[in-house]
Image (tube, rainbow, N blue to C red; front, side):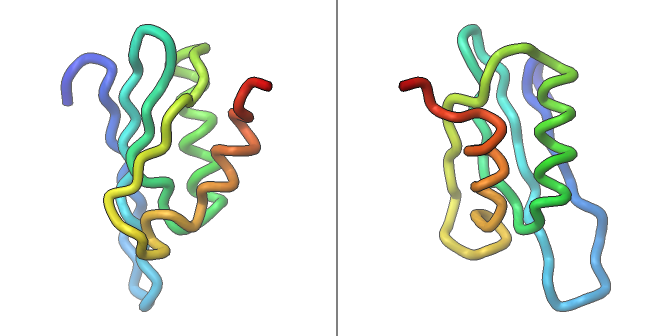
Length: 85
């Protein structure tokens, strides 16, 4: 990936419930995340990794589609990076 672009690839699953890849792009004033994944536990690890890479907040969360493996962990990002008032 390019400078400031990180792919978070979840471990393979043998079960019927997959999680999708999450991408983080660190910009000058914040971070853009593409898809949040399905599992809050994995999303919390991704948030921790973003915080290790930068002190900038996640300002944007973009979905590539509406399936749960792309959107179910949105709340983790909202809790970790609440929008300013």
